[in-house]
Length: 165
Ligand code: SF4
Image 1 (cartoon, protein in one colour):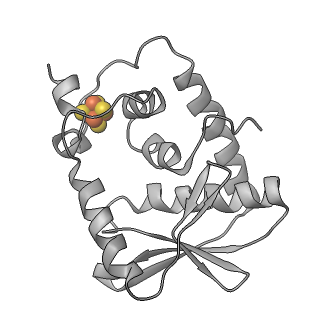
Image 2 (cartoon, protein in one colour; image 1 turned 180 degrees about the horizontal axis):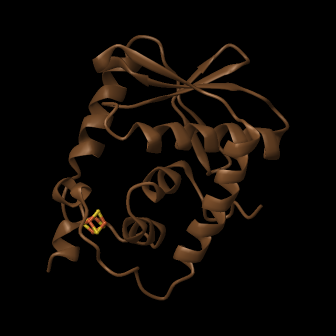
Image 3 (cartoon, helix red, strand yellow; image 1 turned 60 degrees about the vertical axis):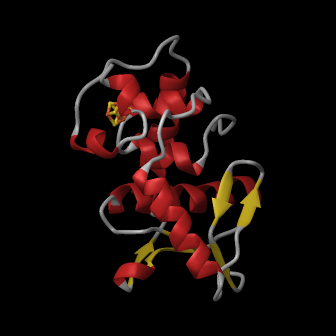
């Protein structure tokens, strides 16, 4: 599997908007601060004062929380985009299994809502991740971003000035 250009952020956005995947994958900086990124940073700062640790692996995955030798977790500011968050964590589990030969359990933690969601790497999820990695690589190989299609996420997107211009 070609992980070269894939990371957790791209996996998260691939469940939201392919056009945004292309912008991020081509290092195009957004013209404005993103509401979700800002909230995410605040949650991380508060949480890290207590217990969590970040672990950066191979320039590909940034794990928010490592507990013991078996559990990794991803912090989110809300459960609004839970499917994206769950698949981002599943991608981490997949990467660690395939590239490092290590099996972990995964969780998505939402401290502001006092919620946590278990993520398991099933055969079906592995297949979905492999399909997604291929899809992301196809998007990144395009000469220009995919056509603009308005979606609900646009109203809070850091790239909306580019897309709505
Ligand atoms: S403004 Fe909408 S279409 Fe443009 S990158 Fe953001 S989510 Fe995608």
